[in-house]
Length: 581
Ligand SMILES: Nc1nc2c(ncn2[C@@H]2O[C@H](COP(=O)(O)OP(=O)(O)OP(=O)(O)O)[C@@H](O)[C@H]2O)c(=O)[nH]1
Ligand SMILES: [Mg+2]
Image 1 (cartoon, rainbow, N blue to C red):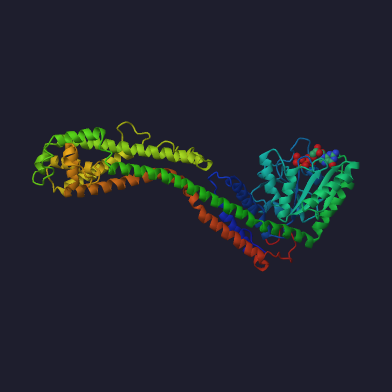
Image 2: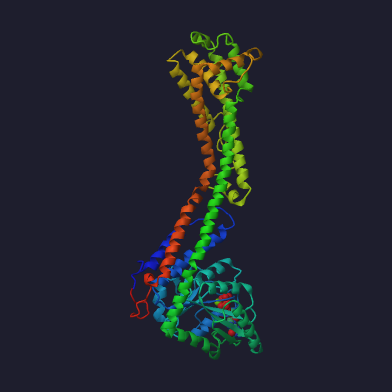
């Protein structure tokens, strides 16, 4: 039928594809759908590995009865009594069964010892050390072709037990649900049963330890409840309260009807296979709904990531706009820059001959010192402007992300460091190098080179002064065309106005300003990237959702075409571990 480890049929291939897309899923943003989706994805992935793949590869493997129900209901005691040996420890300390115990006929043991059914659980022959282990016990009293899996209780207060229990239930060909006259009305087990039922899992009920005279009444009520939960057609065993013997086994008369039912099931190949196929098909049919939930949750991730990205875009867009506005409207020409500019202007004859081509060199020559001071003041003011814009942006982005849970988890405790600390200003010693200082310095250098190239290698001092003019014109002067009456404005403003009309300065300043805005854009983008980088994994989710949807629909198609599914067991082979391996 199949070679171990190879996809044996289209169904197995479709499941393998589903498995691959499931294993790439992540739900990092804590939107409401994320936590349930993580649980669903893990459970589905486990079911594919533990049960769907192995079972669809070998339909003739022994039928696995998972015994489940509330703690203390007598699950382990019943299994031991069925196999007439203390296979799984029973006890008064709740919960007793903390790790799964698989009891099977010795001839079936090889299936479970080597098999990929529950492949993730390490096999042990002694008591399992934890829920990641599976204890294998053989019992000659069991018929071949039918095995029992004793599981931790269904509604355990121990979370690890509950999860382990759910994982084990997912591999069942049939559930034997054991409850008692005092526990049968509890809500949790019924919800679990309803889910099993909706998934087409075969179920048998066992009402255990029913006290003599209450039997009729309790069984009647339970039957009513079963009907309400669409479990009316499920076999119900009512086992009266008796005393266990020295080995903890129940008296034969109360066990016999249950054992006979399983013996009949194991012996009747057709019914057994029908049970196996029914549960398998139910589990496969339940996949699309689970995948829908995952796809919706992935969409939620993308939507949340887009919201977060938009907030970052707004914060850093505002920062960039405010810096550009300050440059364009001349806001930088104030304070120290203005004082230095005035000193620079008043040291010469600006008002009468601003920038006359013939006199430019001579005029500017004497102003090297004041020019340097203007440049230094301008650099410092520009640096401050950029730093405060970066701080504003990081604060706004941080505030925006912190307002909701999906963002607040991302701003702290990540490998990239705490986003609350703006990179542009953090950890830089006074006078030290940082991104902003580097940007300003590089922009000044670029402008000085532009001026030098434009001046055709004039005197250094002249270049200095012209650079000062160009730098101020680029970063601190308002755009040309502001109509100011010449008599009412101060000398330095007249110089500014003159700068605006001088074609050489204008061209150089325009180039210099373009260089500056480009550098600012790069800086702002790299600051914003500290936030956006945390969303890159999420933005892939659109593609992941699409891939997942495709694998699920392929699985649906294969399932809907039995001839393609090709999971017909080779009926010529007797069921057993040796077959086809
Ligand atoms: N008198 C009597 N005692 C029983 C019966 N079934 C179980 N017990 C006792 O009840 C206790 C619990 O039984 P277990 O078989 O360990 O119950 P369980 O459902 O496996 O419990 P967990 O493993 O904790 O989920 C043990 O002390 C058993 O000896 C019964 O039919 N009659
Ligand atoms: Mg037990």
